Image (cartoon, rainbow, N blue to C red):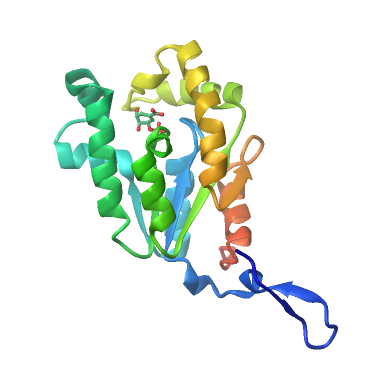
Length: 203
Ligand code: S3P
């Protein structure tokens, strides 16, 4: 909610939310479909802020002692979603953290409630059209050591998931950044400006 006050010299209305210091945000959570750049953006953003970076999929894998595709293969998606909610609840207990979620996390109601009810948490939707995201994922899959994405194996089913999730990401987010034509660095710079955080110094 943005409360209004007036600028003393001009009497012009000013939104108090726009004046709040950066200190009010203690967690930045990145959401979006597979290929949105959540991990790359999150890592760079955390490095800039001097905050911890956590990729929720990595956290799930290390808690389970099993890689994400193996959890899907051995126990199925519903079990993965249960582990995901547990890992999210634990991660949101930390402060000064940038957290990148897996693309399906916001579909679970428990996760949305956790995100909405954890104070000082800014949720950011990294948006782009499905075709761009799919191509990015196909390129990433060529990297040696890339983690497989079980929910991308069937392109038509993936597009249907995208259509279901898109309004969920939009509604949940405090901020949406269209990343279709932005590099990782440009996305981070856009986010810092939106969240009223200091811009990176040129080295
Ligand atoms: C999933 C996205 C993946 C991972 C899992 C399921 C999804 O994360 O959580 O493979 O359902 O969209 P990324 O969005 O980081 O690829």
